[in-house]
Length: 91
Image 1 (cartoon, rainbow, N blue to C red):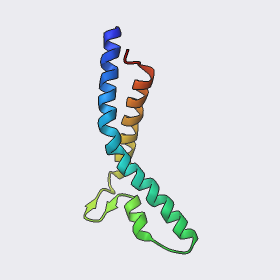
Image 2 (cartoon, helix red, strand yellow):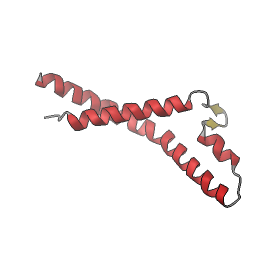
Image 3 (cartoon, one colour):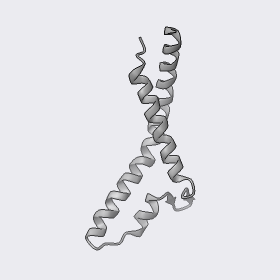
Image 4 (cartoon, rainbow, N blue to C red):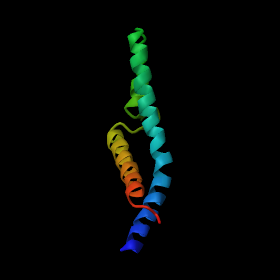
């Protein structure tokens, strides 16, 4: 049983190591553009282009149909792999 826990922990670390950099970029873009759009809107500056980026329309690359699912899926994978590392010690 102890060997199985080590394998789960090693897999969780690998998944976590790969997905955190991938997940961080869209999550930071979404958080940053949403916050900046709100701040600019309070100053009566309508930067609608920020809202398009916030929802996944990145110009040539339009991810709007599945951008929320992408963000949610990446968040779940990073959270689960991080929790697996936290609750299953590697030693």
